Image (cartoon, rainbow, N blue to C red; front, side, top):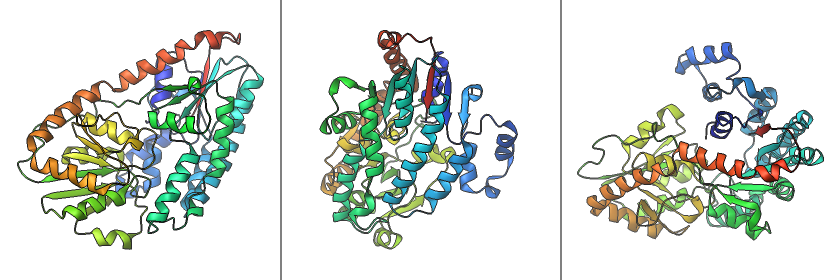
Length: 412
């Protein structure tokens, strides 16, 4: 969420150090050069690097930039999720070992992300430091099972066999982290349920839905035209986000009144996507600076995800007054029949029915649009900050019992 957690902790005077891979906000000359270069001269990886900064954090950031760049290079050349998982497991270990060497006995608590916490937590436990883990997505074992099922159904994506979605190296790291963590923050019930299935006790987990900047993401006036339905998908155009089910729903309807755009890195085979070329517009990845223009164009968001944590695109869409058609596995805060519809996973018929309903009932679209914006205000970034800080402060008794002076470390 663009450094939301370390910024929130810093503003609450809870942040000691923020450890990350690539960060440009503490390199002012390089940041100025990247921002001044015309976008047509700047390759996409450099444009993304220019976004690796956040106001007010520079003095507290420790970044391992060479490790981050090496990881990006290595993952770009890998074709399967199994290969990418092995790269991340290895580089996460190296990252954690570097952070672990810097942990001071003056630290009260460490806050780390799943897959990138094991060595940090081991070092913290030796010093009696409290460990908070954020499980950003359903456990890797859950994801691997779901995706093996998807690959059996749709072998046309980049991964073509189940063994190419082997997340075991990351799953093994997560299982160590759950044992060491004192508390685990989860963005959705879907994540909490996945942890319970794998034996993590409920008392260790805390549900904290995310938030979005509702001043940045907001609705344009008079969005809805009299006819037609503009459908938006935001996310990796692949199996995990459930894209084939949206495409099948569009093929069932074959309505000239529906215009659908897919926004995100394309992971499905282009030859496979070609069979839907008359039904959908595939735009590929767009810079974050252009995402608002996409939300302003749309009438609603469809995200039929198979496995998520709590999909940020759903929060952004609600803030932009877009009703959302999604699944329970997206981990969204959308309520069925209020801000949109929650349909079962792998159900193109249900998606088609809901699209047809919106197409025929413009008043329903307008009513859910207004309700979507109201719902988003309950999950603003400010509300998220309040919930997160209150939760961490509620742990003060447990953290104080380790008899360390007040400070905190965060890695991400």
